[in-house]
Amino acid sequence: MENIYDVIIIGAGPAGLSSGLYASRAKLNTLILEKDKTGGQIVTTDEVANYPGSIEDATGPAIVARMVQQAEEFGAVRKKDTVLDVDLEGAIKTVKCLNGEYKAKAVIIASGAKPKKIGCPGEVELTGKGVSYCATCDADFFTDFEVFVIGGGDSAVEEAMYLTKFARKVTVVHRRDELRAAKSIQDKAFANEKMDFLWNSTVDEIKGNGIVESIVFKDMKTGETTEFNAPEEDGTFGIFPFIGYEPLSHLFQGKVGMDQGGYIKTDDDMKTDINGVFAAGDIRVKSLRQVITAAADGAIAAVQAERYIDQL
Amino acid sequence: MLAVDKNTFEEEVLGSEGYTLVDFWSEGCEPCKALMPDVEELENEFQGKVKFTKLDTGKARRLAISQRVLGLPTIVLYKGGEKIAEVTKDDATKEKIKEMIQVSLNA
Image 1 (cartoon, rainbow over the protein chains, first blue to last red):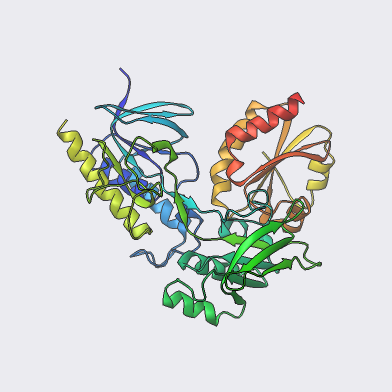
Image 2 (cartoon, rainbow over the protein chains, first blue to last red):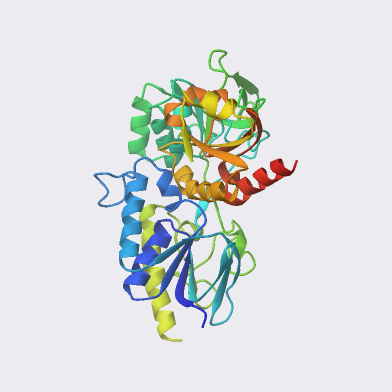
């Protein structure tokens, strides 16, 4: 007979790993699917300072490694596979992947979100060529170079400060005249000598032949544009956009209820509008997208999945 | 996979006659580490046809930039020392790397 899991969790970030921990601890036969790096967005974060208990060795990879170990100790199975399609109706759900098809009684969607793109000309072409959404991956390339961070929220300013450890100068480009980041983060940023700020500005275009060579800013108040060219001795510079996130929910479009932004709607028990299908973490409509809320969602989703399976 | 560095890159990659693939990665790059087992599988698949190497850019930053690599992960395919194709960031998946190699081998 073909193997039917109790629960399949799509995504191995903090929400998926917490779901996996709670589900497997409840003796559910649990499969966690991840197509990419285990840990989701948090694994590319240098320091997670606001997750309770994460004081020593609080890097993203260290926290994720502990979450994985904990989930696996209770018996959760992890597979690296890419979900292509899902059939969520009925008592047995099917998850079609690149390397096979998996079936389960319940599904927890924890596929998360990814950084939003600016949407300006040149951005896509020059990604990996000076444009980066992963500071821990690419900061090193910009040692002693100039870097621009686009955005004014917590992640933008925190990533900008991380980049000051490498770059000669880091300029935060923000469309408003004040930051949105938490006050404590702002204080550190303003005190950092390597940080500079370009207010009321957006990015109009990124140019370069194979690598980033210039960036065009637009002043929101005057409409004027200015172009920054790579210093000749450097030849290039870095651009790190952190202007928010978009949900990785296209696979579930038309299958699970979503808001206009593509975030999945759930009730307080993480239930979607399909029986036996739950959502957890950044993929949900919610007010705070953090490791701690992802982990909490994951726990609730797993407990509710267990209750749902018990009633089948 | 053969680990190359700033001293051996010239000989092992640029001076190599046939197809050579370079996996540009670094210790700090988690997506690179997640991808590497896939690249190792492809190495087995293309054994005898493509030479697989990896370069830790953390110790060869200038070399990487000279190869126009400014973001990780980046997988570059060389033929006779000339860069002929590459995939980077979201495109650096097992499927797309395989496609890149196949297209180049059949060209």
